[in-house]
Amino acid sequence: QKEVEQNSGPLSVPEGAIASLNCTYSDRGSQSFFWYRQYSGKSPELIMFIYSNGDKEDGRFTAQLNKASQYVSLLIRDSQPSDSATYLCAVNERGSNYKLTFGKGTLLTVNP
Amino acid sequence: DTGVSQDPRHKITKRGQNVTFRCDPISEHNRLYWYRQTLGQGPEFLTYFQNEAQLEKSRLLSDRFSAERPKGSFSTLEIQRTEQGDSAMYLCASSLKGAGDTQYFGPGTRLTVL
Image (cartoon, rainbow over all chains, first blue to last red; front, side, top):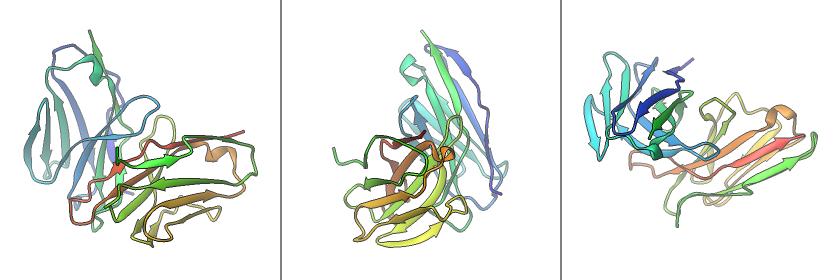
């Protein structure tokens, strides 16, 4: 059973702070890693994807991947109240570049 | 907007009724996926199409569920003899093979079975 684990939260940070969201996965053969943002009652929206070890930056967002530790994280700099949402980590299964396994998500609250 | 669209957005039905949902993927995307999401959980994979071929079905998908993508464009998901446990958000996503297979989700259909 492939597993993706996330802290359910809630994670509460003040406006302007750095929010750090973490995810671990069980399938060592996974190759593709995705972060989605989901507002309450809405569908997941892609934030970032990462395939290689290291950091990948896009605006205020940085994804970090460590395949040896089976760990992927998302950093949100200068957090805004509009960033308040559930963040879903998704990992592809070994041998499949299409089937994603999602974590349960971490609820982030950014306080003004 | 040329994103993934789903119809209807909400469906309320009585137990035992059949329901059908439609998904229109991003126009150039050849891969289409159905997921189901319940409260407090991440989306769970149900099935996957590449063009018109259904290449995988999850064990979660009982015989009451069927999906089609007849011409490799839009897809339908039908649930027969609905049960209260079918109440969930049904999400459709699409991707382009060879472009990282990044999946983009539609707005979802929220099903409530009374």
